[in-house]
Each structure stands twice: as structure tokens, then as C-alpha cells.
Image 1 (cartoon, one colour):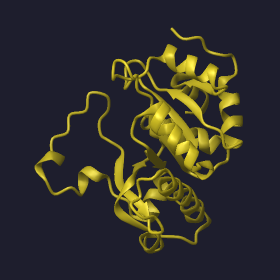
Image 2 (cartoon, one colour):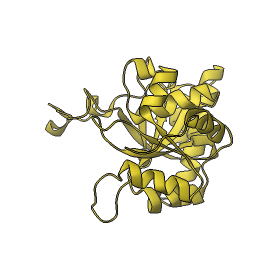
Image 3 (cartoon, one colour):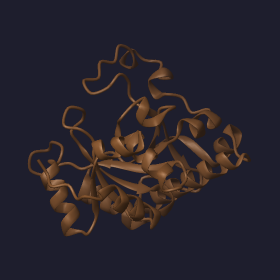
Image 4 (cartoon, helix red, strand yellow):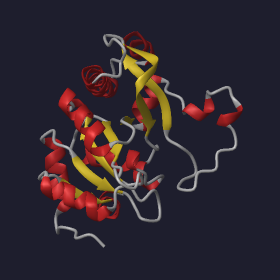
Length: 224
């Protein structure tokens, strides 16, 4: 059992508001993973490098249900015309939240730290414009292309009341911090075992790098 600070959630919200990353562990009986979570609008190339080197998982941007609907973003398993998309049996959830992988049209290959940082920050700007009421699916298609190198995730309609994955945990924290409905999530992996980084090791990383570590249960108890 890792040590939990008394007010980790408030510290996490303050860090996100300041554009800083936090570490969020979901639940031992779910994925049992700790993700690095950034407000998407604050991501710079050095942050993408940190996600590659220190986390090692898949760099994704979670968008709220409302934003995803306005942009016409599908669930990926619903649009892949191949037998591999059928009969999903996920051990940790009812369905995946994956939507389209995208690149911003001003990128080159889309995979470099600079390219991915541009795509990520522009996704945050797009989400903000959607909620302001002056941006839709056609605008999104003019600015982004698929396939790409930043994977989009669709948040559940009622966030933590519907689903308690890192997608919803990150979006609930962003909403509470009054940030755009776009957050980066990336799993932390153990270099030696190749499995998910243990909560104790993730907390040690947070302490060494002066980052906030928060348990998913604390987020659910306060924000669901």
C-alpha cells in the first residue's frame, strides 16, 4: 500500500492549473496502472520526450463526451471494418475509449516530439473552441488528419459515474480545475519487468521529481 498525502487531490488540481503533470493511479482491480496526466494545452516537446522516456506507454489525448460528439468522433472499434474489431473481451472494462488517431495538418511525419506537442496543444484549443460554440466537425477535419500519431480517447457522458478509467479520471480533474476538456494520459511502465509500474515505484518517481501522485479512489470519492 502506497502512502497517500492528506490533500493530494487539491495539490493535483493546483498542479494541473499551473500546467504541470500529475501521476494518477487507477485501481488495483482495474488496470492497476499509473498514468502521467498533463493538461493538453500545456504540453511542449520536452513533455512528449518525458512521456516517451519516463512513462513509456501510449501517448493519448482524452476529450470529453460533449467535445467528441460535436466533432463527430467515433469509437474506433465501431468504424474498423475488419474482424479484429469484433467480439472484444476486455478484462478491465466493458469497452475501450479509443477514437481516431490524428495529426495536426501542420506536422510532417507527426511522430516527433515537436509534431506531437503541436497536435496535442491544438487539440486542447479545438476542445475549448467547441465549448465556446464556434467549432465543429468540418473545422476539425480542416485542421487535423487521420491516421496520425496522437490517439484520441472519448470520455464517458457522465464521466466517473459511468466509467472510472484514466480517461474519465483525467477529464474529471481537468473539469474541476476549470481547464479545457482535453488531457494527455500515458501509462508508466517498468523498464525491468515490462509490466505496469508499481504504485510504490510511481510514488517514488513522483517524490523524486516533485510531482503530485493521486489515487483514483480519492478522485472518485471527491468528484464523482
